[in-house]
Length: 176
Image (cartoon, rainbow, N blue to C red):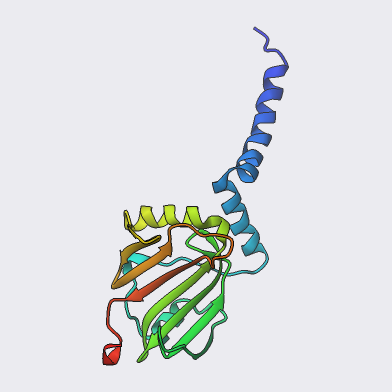
């Protein structure tokens, strides 16, 4: 039995259009396309086990991510007396802008990830998968993550900075 020529043509067309449709028109495909484009343009990617964050010592933590161009200096005092920041392309598969570590007495006291606003829903979905259901209070989502607390806004408006913040549970010295 001879097959009509239309079948192979339709299969070939589906093989070409299917992946293109997924990459361009689905949220997951767009996120992955953006991540690859950021990598191609030289932006760094970081994978971090948020469930294992702890007050690591500064040299040890920075050496884990030694491929990033860290710029270190004085912190603002609230999160730590010293901070190290680096531009970033992708964080755990989510397109991002920057990663900042704050240190108090040489140990990690906080972390701030600034990510691309359009991927807020994808980031929250990833955090739910990795860390479980968050506590929601006053428009803020909160997870226990390692030896600290991870917080993000429940909704990010165009006027908001899209940021994820981790703060150690260890109280700052002096009870502040």
